[in-house]
Every structure is written in C-alpha cells, then in structure tokens.
Image (cartoon, rainbow, N blue to C red):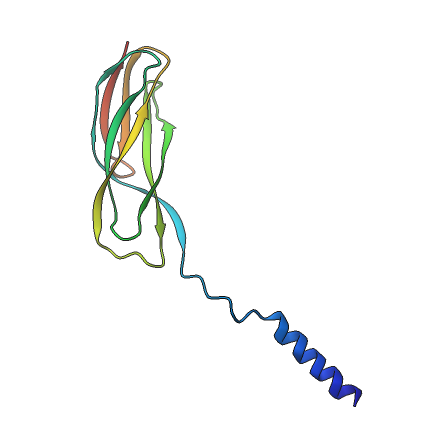
Length: 133
C-alpha cells in the first residue's frame, strides 16, 4: 500500500512540475550589421554643432527593425566607421529586402575634415566627408 501511495505521489509531483500551458517561443531575436546603401546630409558644420545624416540601408522587409548605429574608430584620427545594426527575428524572416532610412547624428568637438564611413560590406564603405570649423 505504501508503494502505491508513493508512486501516486511521485507521478503527481512530476506532472505538477511540468508547465504544459507554456507555449513554445517562436521568436529568435538577433542583432545583425546590415549594409548602408546611401548617405545624405550637410558637409559642413561648426565645432560642437550636430548635423543629421540620413542613412539608407537594406533590411528584411517583414522582420528587420533598426537597433542602433555602432561607431568604431578607423585607422585615422579624423575618421569613423559606422555600422547600421538591425534587430531580426531569425525564426520568421523572409528573404524579401526593403530599403529603410534612419538619421545619424554627427558632432565633433575639434575642427578638421572628417570622413564618416558607413559600411557597405566588411571591406567597402560609403564615405561622407564633413568639414568641422
């Protein structure tokens, strides 16, 4: 009798610990750097005065949402490399691409001629030159 009650208690405990009402998640979020396709905006500004550069980029039409711009210094002190980062749901993306736009704010505290390089690929860039006076 004790074995029977123990078995029933064990099975009840086992079933109670399983949450069968929980749905499987169909979301697989991932942040990916995507290619810039064009950059437009002013080419001159004053020290500590921000300008807006409009950046067009390619993304998956049904699941890519802008996440951020990632800036890394390149080989020269007056040059920045910018990557457009997009949030994707890798579980439900299709292959149809669309072109989206996002504003990038450029501001420097020292005068000079700056090259802002937006990644097209790992080795090619769209270069926008800005003179800061």
